Image (cartoon, rainbow, N blue to C red; front, side, top):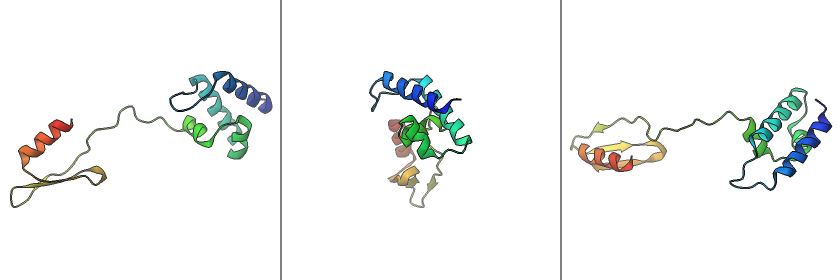
Length: 116
């Protein structure tokens, strides 16, 4: 790979792709080329800052192209343990500090139905 020529061709392709911003993704082929360039240059010992400068890209943009793909769908619910309190009321602890307290089993079931 001719480094200068490939970097210049990449920058030209970025220019032709037009302005980018929220909701305006780079074409998949351009992402693939940028990621491959990064891999080759890093394997040759080039610092990340040099690669970013050569390509004219931001760290966050290029990092997103080489990161492993996110799962297609994240689960909406995670397993929880429901323990009945002596008074017959439930306390449910969910992810992110969510706490549901004071409902009976039917109330929790109704809440989960409405959230689904």
